[in-house]
Amino acid sequence: QVQLEESGGGLVQAGASLRLACAASGRTFSSVVMGWFRQAPGKEREFVAAISWSGLITICADSVKGRFTISRGNAKNTVFLQMNSLKPEDTAVYYCAGRTISTITRQASDYNYWGQGTQVTVSS
Image: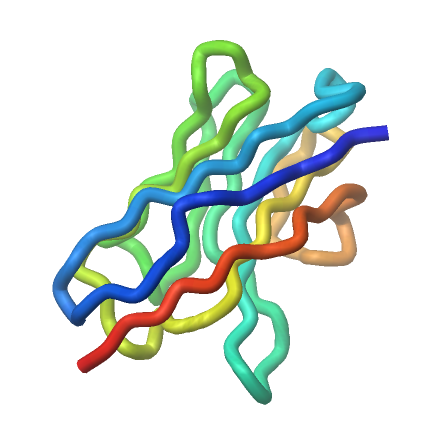
């Protein structure tokens, strides 16, 4: 089993930056692909970014391209989401997810493990 725990959320003003972290424990080798998703009130969970095991392949949503960067720690069991130039529409609960198959994907249903989420609120 794999446990994922997010940290780093908070309340910031528009234009500010935040760095989210996701720490994996347990059978961490099972989480080959790691991703970030977010869910705003009244909306469906949406893909934000994902990264391969090696860290060499990353994908992100068009809505965050150029502002958010996903990266992986040297120990592979930590994933970061650097969020710059935050906008009020980025307000959501951000979830870390792990996938046991190496193919990188944007589909939430393809991920096997999920964290509890961390709240990000951006005020205008």
